[in-house]
Length: 92
Image (cartoon, rainbow, N blue to C red):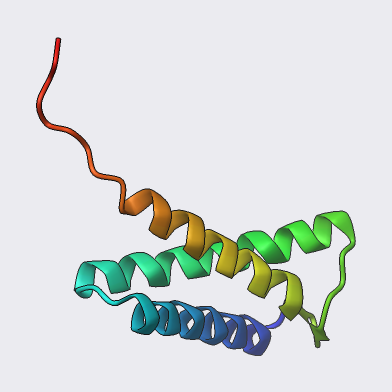
């Protein structure tokens, strides 16, 4: 992957995280969480696409379709897991 493709992928992943934060809301901590989750999901989606040979909407050396799906899935799962509240009281 070339440096321009890497920077473009990073820009797209950060855009997905920012749009998700705009839709879901939250503070600065949530924004950072969504940006990190989006980048991790984008990378994971790209690597899974390379590993399995799945090509969906290729853009140069970047497999944009599978990477985008990975980013969205990671955002949804990470948001769901981050909203689980723990019960501080022990009922033992």
